[in-house]
Amino acid sequence: MIALLYKDILKEMDMNSQILNLEDLPEDFTTSALYENAGMDESFNTFRNLMKNTQKMVFIVPEYNGSFPGVLKAFIDGLIFPDTFTDKKCALVGISSGIQGAGLALSHLTDIFNYCGMNVLAQKPKLSRIEENLTENNLSQLYHDLLVEQAEKLIEF
Ligand SMILES: Cc1cc2nc3c(=O)[nH]c(=O)nc-3n(C[C@H](O)[C@H](O)[C@H](O)COP(=O)(O)O)c2cc1C
Image (cartoon, rainbow, N blue to C red):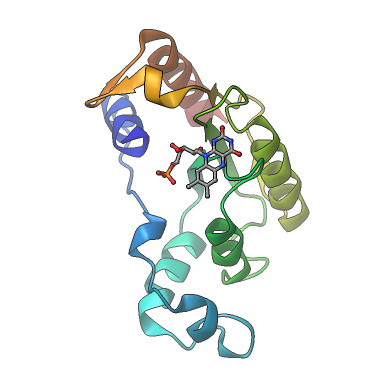
């Protein structure tokens, strides 16, 4: 839902974007597309190539057990290194049910992306207590404003 809202915000700014939903990855990609099988799963390669050919990205990151979801790390591990990342730019948005807004998750992810050569926008909204702030596609005004502010900065980044 946040990704769709973010897409709308970018559209308002005349920016086209495409959503890559990790739920759409092949279910078996950790065995069919990683390590010695890197590049061999055609359905995973569609996502791999999209990431390689994209210059700016926004990661919408839910907090899982105090960090980011394992599927995201497995996805990153399956991407073409370092060409997917080198000198590219990204923005991170954290989401959580609790009070942290995935702050630590975004720090962990920032370290990984910096290691891979990707620049991370300093402004990282942390959308805590998400269930109280997002209902039926209606995001609270504060959170909406934080996303707009970040999107403006990402375009200039
Ligand atoms: C496996 C798992 C671990 C979670 N761990 C945390 C957590 O450590 N802190 C927190 O505030 N919320 C946690 N949550 C709640 C999620 O951050 C929240 O429900 C989020 O909106 C889930 O996004 P998703 O539906 O895209 O996975 C967890 C949820 C799941 C499924």
